[in-house]
Image (cartoon, rainbow, N blue to C red; front, side):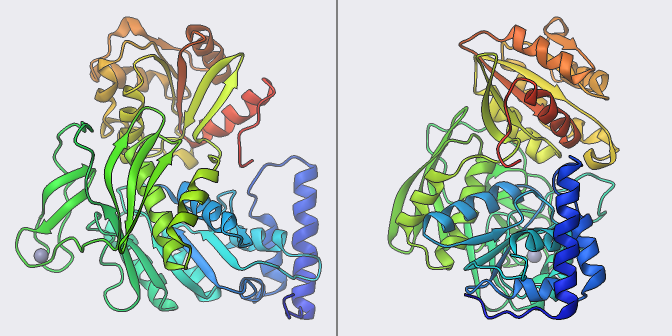
Length: 459
Ligand SMILES: [Zn+2]
């Protein structure tokens, strides 16, 4: 039992937050609304720090460009499987108001939260703000890629914000060794590094030049002895002694197939085989990051293996569903690095149909030039049929054409519902339909597939 006694203003804030959340739910106004959080914060300035201080073993933040939702979902699964109770903003409301809303929702009417850990997915730029109100014990950083160009501007600015957020509470940092933008975010003190040590010899990843990045010590260009993807790999500064730190938690013999991945997880002298029902090297990193955080919190390596097995995929992140008896996998795409990894995972499925749905609403990023930075060329070797949809269906059709895909294999069907019907008709019972939507296409898709009687997980 927590010994928290709400102040009068906290009591009012909880009441207003819970009532407005219920009203929003009844009106069907959608998931992850920030409004209850905003009300609660108006009524009590310390509501977030009061509620978040209750989990007995502390708070964990997950931040970075890609993989925040999947990584926090995986970590939540590991911790729950190990017997801990978690409060988690799992709907992806990752700004200060959304996190407040999640905590108000998790609390009872007296504002009590019975949990061992608070687990929060936090927007990179919001971390220092949230860290002022939540005493974050552990900060996990996934990676720092160039995101939608119009969002934060420089990567350096984002890195500084994260470093500031870590410094605020002198949090233990769980950092990606393989990302030169991430591994240095905490220089001194408690930290744990994770990384990919080796790919399986049969794993053929296309040889590519790493994305350009620069040494945070001297500004010289970063060089690589091997790359995984993007700027991730075994790197060193071309000028000074700055180099990839050896990871404390690492994966070896990584194999990434069309719908699954496997690797050996190492920590100290212990090692264990991990099988994921998720495709792509990006999901290997997500699982590795979650494992590193769990191990640093005292979960055993067997516990990590069990928790990863329990994990069921989140809303729109490599989720496999069945529509009209056809197998469908949906993978959200939102930036070049993620889209490249998805395209490569899809390209390994030689028996597939592909639907790409692109919108350019604010939540998708207005500027769709990132489509040209993603490796859709990986899809060119497939014999698949392609359907393009969404507000920018025509642009996507052009992009696929330039990727080397025969135009006779590309259908443009702008309305998403009709595009899905077409794609399902083009998919045989033994094939898989891969759907790659941007964020607002994913939201629309969620409504459409409800008409098929299917609800995506995590909603
Ligand atoms: Zn250097």
